[in-house]
Length: 150
Image 1 (tube, rainbow, N blue to C red):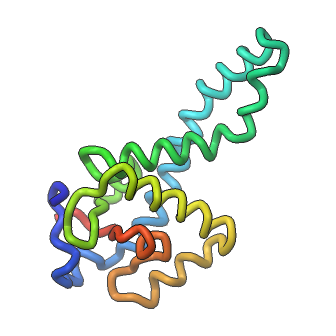
Image 2 (cartoon, rainbow, N blue to C red; image 1 turned 180 degrees about the vertical axis):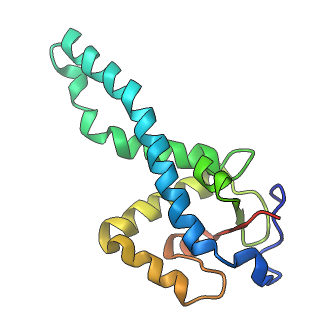
């Protein structure tokens, strides 16, 4: 089981109270971290592109999504089972059995997140309003749950 997270199978309303707004704010914080990571990587690709006569400029348009996928996958699938934004907002991610998510589950969750955001934009948050645990589509499809740390 992940650090300081109750089992999501046992419905504890306190573990899910206010999770939706915390998740939204956590993602905004995560975007800041991803943007900060983009600066050095973007600079390296830009300078490398000058040296390689533009060859390294090709990945520049994909830098943000690539760093976002890596950032979320390695942090959610890692030892703390949460991104830096989620940690600051007192949230953690677990499987529906209460276990720590593995890298594959974390990757599937973030991939589904970006896919649903691309299709439905912020409307994906509406799904969380209509279920008791505030789970979103990408959580349900990846069998993960986000809840407050104890």
